[in-house]
Length: 295
Image (cartoon, rainbow, N blue to C red):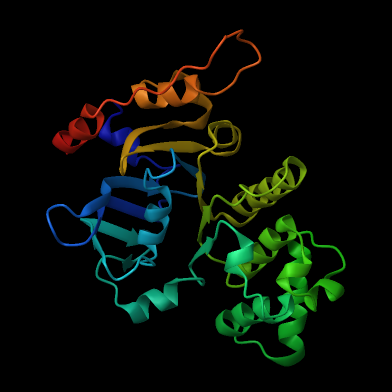
């Protein structure tokens, strides 16, 4: 079992985000679904991967940090500290000042995150007007600059297009451009490459990597792709049943000790092993119970 100090550690001492015992319950009855259970970690100026199967709580974690869950969700935590802001007790007005400007989120699918009735320039322009207070020609100039920063060609043409007229990869870049409008300190990327082909995915990852290294942001990278997480991220949190069961450096993923992480790795096809059939994950209910009693 990974030690508590390993789970909380971040790159260096300059933590941008500190989470302690974050839990989410959908409903108030004893039988209500517990989507997150006592999740704790620190985020520094690094690429932190959140890895696990569908339903493990990865996306819920990202949305809980920004308080973007539906009203039925009951969020509790001993601490959710962003810079000098207490997110646990922050009002909705305070959260509105944080979302997008200081902590931004890249949604999983641009087809649903972008407004199909608005031109690209107008959508990115909304973020520019809201966060930078620019209008008219200055706003347009900044929008074009942001589109160029995410390596979109022909930005003057793209400015007037609608979301259905751009590819999935370009849609993701447009979402990142909107995200960058306010120079956020933390970006939460929820499966940003799941709908992209290999070439476009690689370009997008290079772009995100540049943002972390050049601007010193903290990136929470949510994915179910273990190989991608190992290659791209600095640290990994492995989630199972709404809990962090293991925390380790991405480069040390193949030395994971928790049986759940080992099971995920064993289920991946490998060219260097001649196996007649990939093993099936055998889940132990005690994994979740052991984590609960260890808190």
